[in-house]
Image 1 (tube, rainbow, N blue to C red):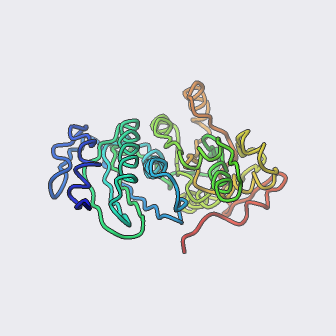
Image 2 (image 1 turned 90 degrees about the vertical axis):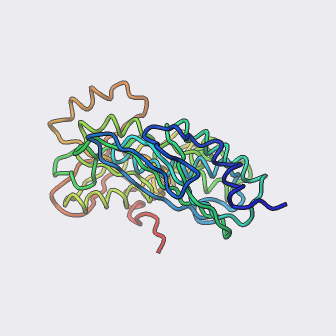
Image 3 (image 1 turned 120 degrees about the vertical axis):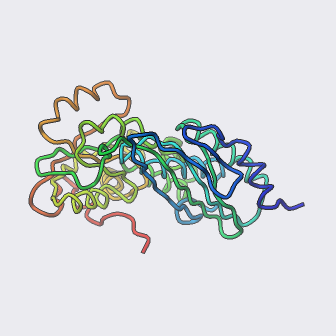
Length: 316
């Protein structure tokens, strides 16, 4: 017997939702969730949509889809220096298949618990597999990291390594035995929440890298009214990427591949020493890759710098 919409929600989502999460006065089961933002905090809200065949392979395991979708959406909160609190999910499915829904719901609940997020509502409907996740978090009033705070002379940094996610997708599509480390980076990115929180006293601007470094840094530059000079040789590459691809291809994906969900941020010169001291033992590596400049546009130096000039991913 086919599951109804309400049976689907009750069986695979309501039972694992955190009805008593921080600030949740009323969660799943009513027309709206009732949520309370702590005094002195601003609400940060973001929504992402992932479509089968566009953002992940059509045959991707449901548990991996859940983890990837959650981290991709939470990455926006990380870029704002916001602390995650709540999650809503709109799920479009070709069919209410328990064999798909059970691992998806389980992985989503585990991921939400890892990040301290409460699932508080959503919707389900029939159609091509599509997920829309909306995340809510909070940040002290006036302390959010924005794209428009960069100034000429600010140092440009990125977290982690770049290019791995696009390499992982390439491995899945074209390699008989994909490199596990690269596939893991595609399916299970890490939202840099702790890093975003640590950056609040030091960073002047920030953005997450979803469409590629060149494209996303370009958004930050535009909003800040700056240009930038980037040393292409400084882009951090993982050992897995270096060992599976030629240098030019690795650098190309690091510059314009996207989907890594790392952070790109800027730090003013007068805060650099304090920033470096504060993050000296931070578990996520940060790498300086360049400097904001007053001259508009992006200038890339170093060998093979031209391979990143193609920009990032665009839907339209």
